[in-house]
Length: 549
Image 1: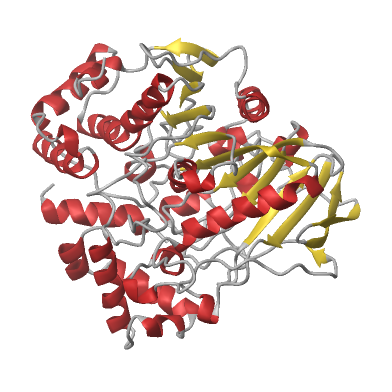
Image 2: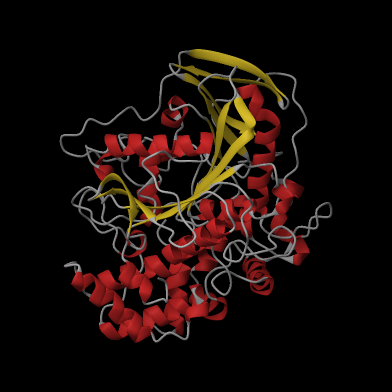
């Protein structure tokens, strides 16, 4: 994989695939209802104003509450603005997702078909009892900062609510509307010119702090958790001391904990924004006045333009180290003195390179290496982008270590398995382990996990995102049941309980082992060792190739 190929592959990571996924059902499985039924309405009075939601059999749901003014017109590419208090009950029956295009692996995770709008800054609250004072969990969805929705099929709040927490799921600006960056877009009030989606996430968290008591939540016991882009955003928010007091625990699921050169600097992001403006026949300031859908569609076309990829690499519609909103990369930051639960899936890379649908068909994705020479080149180039500090290690020895380790365990040892394992480690597992080590050395409660349950046949592996329906108890949703399998209930119950216990107490339960400074042991979930295998040694031979003991 030479430089141009590497850039094309990384570009694909941001925009790969875009069509709606079909709901499928496994043979012999009885899917659950996709959404719980309402038994009436409930109105509460919150600092934001009165909110009218739906009564459910086991609690209440308030869907689509605005946490900031619609980011339209002059508020496009501007910091979120707080809503004035309203006086009439706001009917919280749902709200739109950010404008996006689904397909490929994203459509395997997200069912799509949602209303979409630029005015998307809403959140959803699921509460078991609005008169209580329960732990609060705030979810930031993933999707490469381009796709996703808080109230998607996989992240409805019924199971977590029944387990005893108030759950909040957040919609934030995505794609071009959320992540274009340019000094010419500077917000006069805040000085920000980038990271609009990250600012939305913080605004939602501030709304939760100020309003959640009215929904039965404890504003002094908030757990911020997210997956993939949402996991990395969780780290970015937590490590910023300006957000102190907004969260009291953090869960990072498969966050890449990124930094340069894999993510853009201001100059690269600004050049991309200028190129988009030229494509649309306007200047940077003029991007605020064009139809939102036109900006979105033109940016997707630009992201796939080979000339752009050769010039700038991965489309920089991503978090940017702007020094205003984002002052430290997640890779380099220090998390505050709060409990941390962090982990990855067994085969993260399957999501991009080897994902199979319930019908047995390959999901369109990225091109993996096809021979030993390409494997070495792919590892060298990926290391140079995501693990620059290890770029002096001979890539042929790294490749050989992965092949040899798999062979010693009696596992497939070909080029594709070695690449999937190396990619998983370079982009995800090594960073998660390092974050856990730093946190525990600082004296803070830390728990490290690996999700190991494979997809139901005919699919295979444990890809990126596969833990989500187990955490949220949505494994029996018609969109997921053929992917998770019919026997998912015990593991899901254990994981839901662990996540909720962590939110309540800072510990995921007595079956888990806490990381120690001398050995950040892994809690293996859903593997051959049972629901929770505490203290597992997980593929240490591969880690040794990177100098990890």
